Image 1 (cartoon, rainbow, N blue to C red):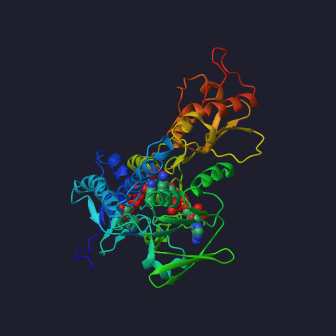
Image 2: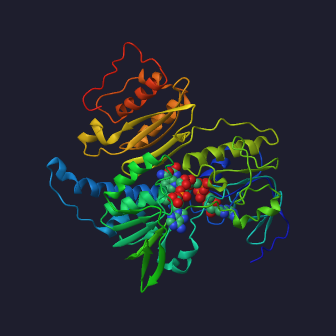
Length: 474
Ligand SMILES: Cc1cc2nc3c(=O)[nH]c(=O)nc-3n(C[C@H](O)[C@H](O)[C@H](O)COP(=O)(O)OP(=O)(O)OC[C@H]3O[C@@H](n4cnc5c(N)ncnc54)[C@H](O)[C@@H]3O)c2cc1C
Ligand SMILES: NC(=O)c1ccc[n+]([C@@H]2O[C@H](COP(=O)([O-])OP(=O)(O)OC[C@H]3O[C@@H](n4cnc5c(N)ncnc54)[C@H](O)[C@@H]3O)[C@@H](O)[C@H]2O)c1
């Protein structure tokens, strides 16, 4: 319905999207004296808290409890889990709502003048139109509209039987049979969690790797571990059709199966279509995403900045926060811009074993790189806990053994990833890392074999006072 006031609103900086990136931008801007507006159609809290990181980790936590009970017999402890699906989903929602209410309260604390509850679209480089007809003239604009799940065409006519991350956590009970399409981070995390909670799961991906791992050996190590728990079909694009209130998938030569629901996790493209970016006059890439400078977050030389999933570069929570801060600080100082030193890239998938990529993932055969490997299917501490599986690959500079990146699927992989990201940030060589203390017996000391391999390949010294033998079960 058109708004009664035809007079355009105006401000110094408009932020489109009140998620993690938009709110981080607002924090940088709020004490600058600039007039601000933040626009969002819902102000429902961040994706992370409502339908992303937190509910998925809550489901994974329930799954781990079930898994621990089911596998206790290996330690001589006998028990069988009785899984109350209604209670599992209720805890996910109750805790999710508590996390979400924290982010909602921050939004409610914003003054009425600051908040514009509406969807924004560009009508000019610095002009926005809101979906209630109001117009807003802003000297500088930050786009922080996030990303949305997409349904491939084949699933659109079956949308009522499909789930995405927006709906899956609202299931009142666990399904009996669930197909998951897409083995990226969302697909593998949720497929394993549902399988551990007793759901019959089949996971399909048209590609050949899992969890976004581009190192084939590491992806295979994770895929092998996942296959122990549920059916995983790579290089497979099934064809769906409705059969009563079920979805039937067919694939391969003549394989078929019916499922109660299909969880579609085939990617989350940036949420840009409603923005009418053509009117902003920005240069766009082949996917229609504005070209931007990742060190300033500025789009071309326009007074427009982009942060978070909206720019599709690093669609992760800590990066959305950091990009929002960079965009906010630079929108404040525009036209003077500061170049931010970006963090070492790190992406973790919370499967068990957990998967991660850190820094540069360097394909095999590059003359300037050496690779060191650590086999976690034979790692001491992991074996004591009956969870030995996985592989770590470290990529290092051939000249001096400086660690440049890592791919891994390993127990406690999320912690190993942090250790490696910090070492890479500090410019450490394999030799330097081996000079630092590794406690015994830990999952961390498993990295030593990969580091020694790099030292050997680069003729780097291991400090004379360090023992280069491996203790039992390293
Ligand atoms: C299931 C799942 C699990 C995840 N797990 C993890 C994890 O474990 N770790 C991790 O690092 N990352 C994880 N992520 C990714 C992480 O959630 C996102 O990277 C992060 O939430 C992105 O924040 P954002 O600010 O860019 O977007 P959002 O928080 O989505 O905010 C975008 C905002 O823009 C608003 N908006 C959209 N269009 C318009 C418009 N035209 N006008 C006005 N407002 C608009 C929306 O309403 C929304 O409030 C996960 C994601 C999912 C889906
Ligand atoms: N732990 C985490 O940090 C975490 C967890 C979940 C999500 N996320 C973020 O959310 C983003 C989106 O995750 P996602 O897993 O939905 O997307 P994704 O793009 O990472 O993975 C999608 C997968 O679906 C496959 N695919 C695409 N179309 C298909 C089709 N028609 N049939 C079968 N397979 C198909 C692709 O090959 C790919 O492996 C990620 O990039 C990540 O940044 C992060």
